[in-house]
Amino acid sequence: MKRMAEITAGRNQLTFDIVIQAAPEDVWAAVATSEGTQATLFGCTMQSTFEPGARIEFRGQGADGDNTLHVYGFVRSYEPNHEFAYEQHAAPAYDPHHETNYCDMHFRILPEGETTRLILTCDWTARNAGYEHAKATYPESDYMDGIKKFAESR
Image 1 (tube, rainbow, N blue to C red):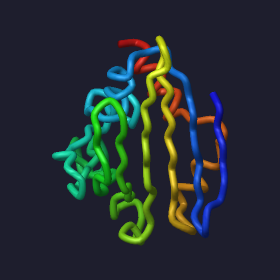
Image 2 (image 1 turned 60 degrees about the vertical axis):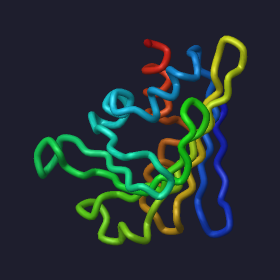
Image 3 (image 1 turned 45 degrees about the vertical axis):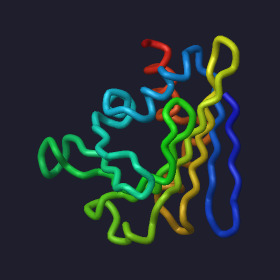
């Protein structure tokens, strides 16, 4: 797995580039369906219409019960089996500055013969604690490993 980190114009960016032994549809299912997010994001389901500009929410077990809001944001692009991008904010319960602290999540899915390349670029606002958390284990990523495992098991 190739992983790169860089700082871009006052923002913090991590890029993950991984080849997965699965079809693009299976990689897509891991990143853009509730079944996939439940397996890769602590049991959270994903809710949205997926139209550009639409709100996206990740909900699951938490302090407010089974439907606790953990992450929310806004869809930037959604092209099934190819590209998915959204602005991601920690829920207000996790970050008092949730409106101004966010991460741009950009998934690109590229077929390569019998495999699929997944490139995930995460671009955090300056002073976003999420970046420091991700960077602490970088270049490892339990999230990317979970996506790979889910897609390859389909």
